[in-house]
Image (cartoon, rainbow, N blue to C red; front, side, top):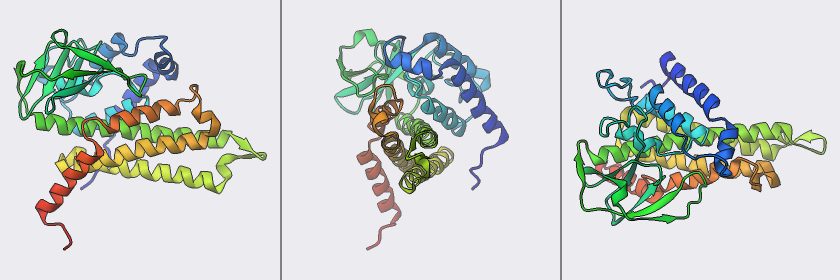
Length: 320
């Protein structure tokens, strides 16, 4: 099976990277993190809708772009690369279910309804909230819910805990499929972050000098950066493959590998930066905090390991 990107896919990824570089540069990220600007820029949100981020997989006759999950993974990898905040995945998955989601006119949140309480990202921004039950899904007016704000490790991802309502407006679609796609797209964001921290570590290692030599010339730093690159590329292979196969086991493996790459690469990037990495001014802590949060969203490590174990047992791939 060939997982090489086509020319159209490369052009799509390049176009989104250019859009985000122009509309969400580092200065905009830092302003949001410092509280000097909105976390979710609604003008940018609508522009992302016009660019097709949310309606990417809707058929063209329904106002979408008509592309598939592999292309969605490429776009969310770019979003993860720049730490673009907001319920991007929820709004993307809601396209076709909630009017105005595909165009970016409405911001949609999403919670897992399989427990008594759900974790809700960006509660102040969401105009509609979708609960994924078992197996049904339904939408609820956020204003009718009693939500309790909780402290988030990520300054760019406000969180609230909400009691799961017994019902709401029924929506079409399968909750299990949306959970799996949410896990894969979260893995794509983690991949983007993992790749970006590799670049940041290598760039800093070339610039920072010690004993009149760039620290990147030291063997220990070389090995650290090499390990970061290997993690990111292994995760990339798994995420891209899962976007094609869509098999539950492949998605679980992709999420596990991408979570590990994002978290460990951010930690290693911090180590390469030394004391500078621990300061608020360095971006590496933002990548680490977002990676921690994403690692617990839509599929935790324990849940992913259980998914893989069940698949191995079902296929008889167990050595006695």
